[in-house]
Image 1 (tube, rainbow, N blue to C red):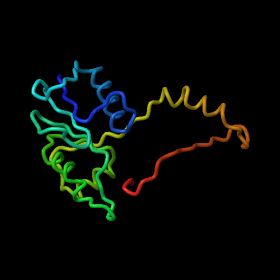
Image 2 (cartoon, rainbow, N blue to C red; image 1 turned 90 degrees about the horizontal axis):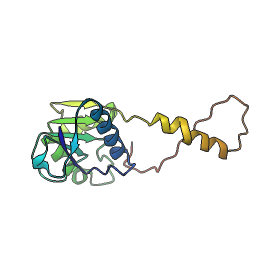
Image 3 (cartoon, rainbow, N blue to C red; image 1 turned 180 degrees about the vertical axis):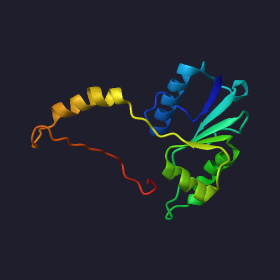
Image 4 (cartoon, rainbow, N blue to C red; image 1 turned 45 degrees about the vertical axis):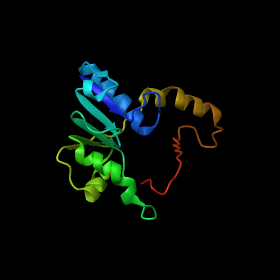
Length: 158
């Protein structure tokens, strides 16, 4: 299967790009897939968030969110996403929340599915945890689990 990926950077660790890399890796275990540089030579187009060009082949769209901050011009911000949504043959949502939010604003899509992001367990269980553990002075009793998370909080994020 030849896939033309819109807006995909296989070297990026951003959420949508990482999801797509993992998806393509999983698909390649079952199917013979090749990424191509021209949509005309593809069997399908795979788009992250919105189309980069006009649709040429059957299109799968992966959405991880839409704009909904009422202090911003969300209608204008969502315009290219909604166009892609309406033109997609299949939509993959990041979460059930994302699906409900998008369908509430854009209408129900005829062929949609939820595929959650999956963490890289080898990375988490290997270097990441071991390196973090070595750098922290633990004031807690032995055997107590402590979890931490970091993020850049922005008004348009859920």
